[in-house]
Image 1: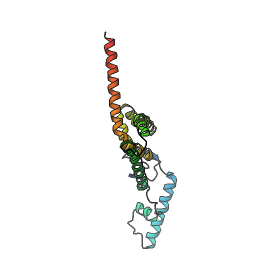
Image 2 (image 1 turned 30 degrees about the horizontal axis):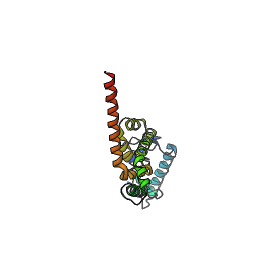
Image 3 (image 1 turned 30 degrees about the vertical axis):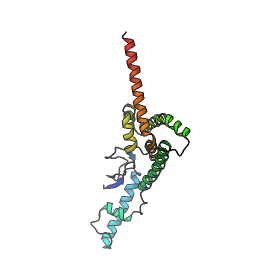
Length: 209
């Protein structure tokens, strides 16, 4: 029985697993996924071993006798398609740049009508609140642990979105909106917290009278 190398479907880390493995848990990100049908993998491995044996017996050149099974698989496998990771990152970067530029222009320039800029300034914080709940929903959809952390620790939502989420378009749009309205949102959050503290103190003072 030999090991084969596959890539994690979430973080793309190369993993070494048994040729008869049915399910794999990534040692880097903890993602569990089903690999190719183990029977078909074993069949392919046996075929490759037979090829190695026949070529070694015949003394044919091109594949040394000391070549490992994994090396044979790499040499005899079909050419892999170019990874789409760079393409996805480039698309995300373009979306982020476009949304960030538009949001910055809406907030800090006078190119657009003043009424539109004023309306967006007032309502954008609520938009971020809605987007925050969407992040929580996405985190719960991914796993309960991340969902619970994003629900209980709001700053963790940003860590999850930037470093763990696979929603690249949503990530780019959210970060682009922060370019123009992130400061307003932070001040809005501070003001709302102060207002809640005042209401709480007033309630406690009234309760102890």
